[in-house]
Length: 112
Length: 115
Image (cartoon, rainbow over all chains, first blue to last red):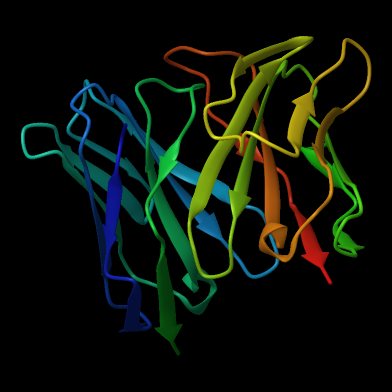
């Protein structure tokens, strides 16, 4: 089955700096890669996703890149703000709407 | 536009009791997924259901756990004879279907504590 590894497990940045979280996956059949943000005591919130037919996708301060050859994808957050502090999870699936395999999570702390 | 709803939000059960967790998908969504999150860990897939059908239960423990999504009403995750190791947050997600466009949206979760 699919295995997703996520690094780093914790990340501390100064407000305004950029943050990068990286994930690798094992199953070459995976084609759908969402990212979720989870705040304390809440459910995961979908923030961006990418499908295998594109290499990069941006949404305001958030971007995701995908390298299918190397089987890794990354989340980039620019101009970080204190409200970006949360746990971020990457996930992979063979297609959207099928079971997701999650990475272990990254706790991002943005210091004001 | 109500999102995915789960209840109860917190549930305390003693060892040996039954736990019933409910999930109402977003309006227009007919696919439901259950995930479990142990403390300080990622989410693990348990089961994927459509109305009256279990599509994939490869992540469900073989004993004590069952799930249903009836024609009417919420999806139910049932845990019989709970043990301390069942203590976790259980999240439900829903989507409109499967395929290129169908993202999963999560509910707030039910935090189960077994004493």
